[in-house]
Every structure is written in C-alpha cells, then in structure tokens.
Image 1 (cartoon, rainbow, N blue to C red):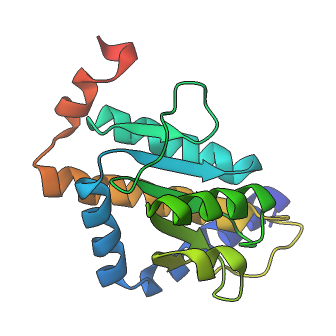
Image 2 (cartoon, one colour; image 1 turned 45 degrees about the vertical axis):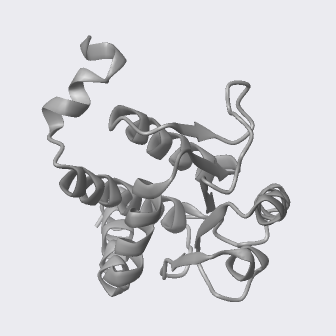
Length: 178
C-alpha cells in the first residue's frame, strides 16, 4: 500500500460517519435556510473555505447568501440565519459572530465535531459531525473539513429538491456559464 492510497482510504472511510446524522435535524436546517431572508456563513481557515463554497452554491440557487466579514454583507437581522462551521466549536471569531446573532435573534446553525463547545451551546440548530481520529493520513481538521464539505453539498441537493431546482437552473445563475 502507498501513503496516497492509505490516505484516500482513511479519508473516504471517514465519510461513513455521515450516515449517522439525524436526517430530521438536517431537514429542519434546510427549512430554516429556505425561510431566511438572508443566509450568512462563517468559518475560519479551511472551515471558512468550505463555508465560502456553500455560500456560493446558495447564491447559485437564488438565495441571498453572504460570507460574514465580506464588504458586501448586509447587517444580520432576526429574519436571517447564520451557519457557523468550527471543528472545535471554540473558534473565537465564530463565538463572537454567535454572540452578535443572539442579540438580534438571528437563527444560529452550527456544524461542529462535538456537543461540548461554546458554539454548539449558543446555537438554535446543531449538526455534530463525528469524525475518526486525525492522523498523518488526514492531519489536523482534515476529516471535519472534508465531512463538512460533503454534508453541505448534500444539503444543496436537498434544497434543490425542496425548491424544485435542477442543475440547469443553477447553471443559469453561475457566472462562468452565462
């Protein structure tokens, strides 16, 4: 076996944990997103990159979606939802965003790797991604970030179905395909 193959197997094997997610909670998160005036996404580092990819897909589905901290992001209100991605659930920037959202009664959705953290506690809707132990085959937060990406792309499929959207509809809103 090569390190490349071992790493592939380790990372792909971790995705089996996604089958343990509570579909009811994921469905409720989709409802909250659909009912929101604006959807804000926030994460730091690689979690932030995953969040930006999700926000882009939301825009391609016709939602008003923003990444927190961008210059074009409006002020969050009680009609909005905010999705926070943090493997540890203790990222200081995400905790601050959660505190601000609480003050204006925005709906807070967290995606973390455990229930024992500040962001999970501050959230209205919570998704916990179980991940295998990090290793040299998938160091640091790789398994959380990869699992978040797969989860959020699957949520895109759920949102598309709920709204009766097809890939062709998204393509019409995709800058490259205009």
